[in-house]
Length: 199
Image (cartoon, rainbow, N blue to C red):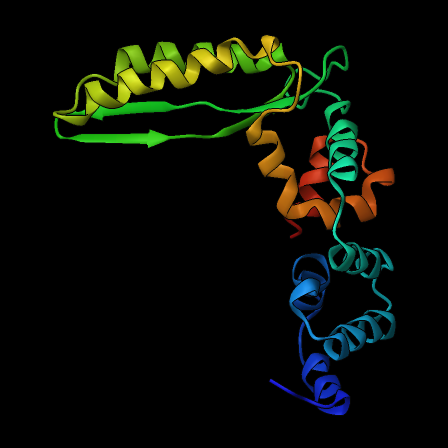
């Protein structure tokens, strides 16, 4: 839609801060140059952090693979959010939890971002739960439980993965502009999640 800047200004003035921040963090590359200029003006007018303008600029130019890899490396040296240690690099794995009762089978696939020891412990716990609770639904209980064994065995052997997993890369990539704009002040995974999922 072709709007002049005055019309755009009127439109963006009505939006709450959260919408302006979302536009800057995640949708800047979808805006017209005029709309992006107005969003940046609005960030300045409202006294919002300049990090939102930085995030918008990063989206427009896009991160190179090398920059993306460096961003993941910086995140991987955060302390483990489960045990608090910094001895091992963080990585990310999905684990699979299956619970069955007669004709109902439920599946959860949480993403675990942690050190290899904590990922392995989470996978081991999931395997044990599935072996006790996963089989009892007809017909999907046994099928999903067998599938979960393969998923969780991969996570159980997380220490063998020396490079970031596909899950880790896919977790960071959609949020890379917002993270990159703030990475120097983010100290742990909880602060990172506050950037990705602000209240």
